[in-house]
Length: 133
Ligand code: MN
Image 1 (cartoon, rainbow, N blue to C red):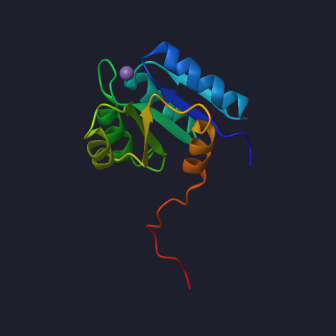
Image 2 (tube, protein in one colour):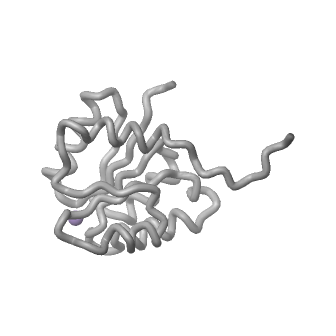
């Protein structure tokens, strides 16, 4: 398959650089942005294979952005994986309700991060249509 594109929406520059470096070293094409507003715009234009969405962002937060993406027919198929600090217990459940397809906690494990991202990308999308038989 072609180089998968990952869109990273993260306002912490050091984190964004870390995610980006690891993913690029592992063969992904990466775009980053610091705001959810811009992330939504980029998601529409890029149709990335995966969006890594920080929960705590200035302006719209990652949960609100995910709800917007998941309620728009043009972007609802995009996979969104939430990212939040391990200490924020409860974020995972709230995030899954907002439409996250998966969830990763920060700090990330640099040794397994790329493999986790790859697994989210290759995970079969939930079949919602009737298969012809
Ligand atoms: Mn943040």
